[in-house]
Length: 278
Image 1 (spheres, rainbow, N blue to C red):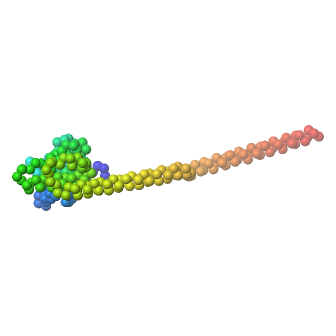
Image 2: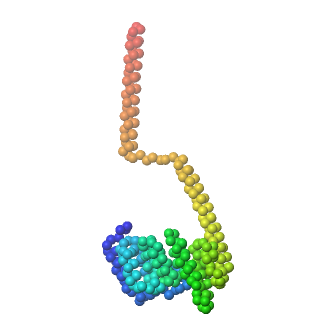
Image 3: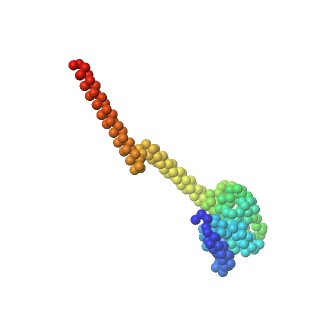
């Protein structure tokens, strides 16, 4: 139903409380995966529940956000409920710049998942410029001069940013122009070539899909034009049939009476005429 009954919404509230209470025991609130492209589509049962229950207003998004924030604490880099809180803020937040920055921080520092962060920056059309600046600064933060390992990690992180941007269809030319001088990115040429090839494949797929859609549209218009020229069959109700039959019978009887009257008049006229001659 469009409006669920109160018993269903009560169950939603109970289930939400149980998810939050037992999250630490079954591992739903943790996320130990820090890779950029590993298991990015994995969805916890708690996330699936929020997507299904929040639109029915059994659990208010404001209450969910407050409870998740209090359960996470003040640490922005805590992985506990990071993805769930980012989902609630993105879908049911106020849409402000602060909400967008907080959601990006949850993806970057909480989940430590660059792919989800880039996807969110591309989805958030209103604040995409600010979010991309944060992403670039995060991936090009200047390391210490004597920390060679940190410099290597910084170049690898920016390479992962290029890969994620290519998968999400972002502008790679602007990202390449923001590479700091002296940063070494392993396999940069191969990554850019594969990104360009992937982009060309997407363009070809889009062109073919547009062509198929145009052909389908022409076929549908031809079918509609053919159907518009066909005749229409009209079914008459039984009562209307009876009225038509009675109308025809009455018309026939009137015609017969009129024919009989004319016949009598003609016969009388001929008799009168013959008598007068005699």
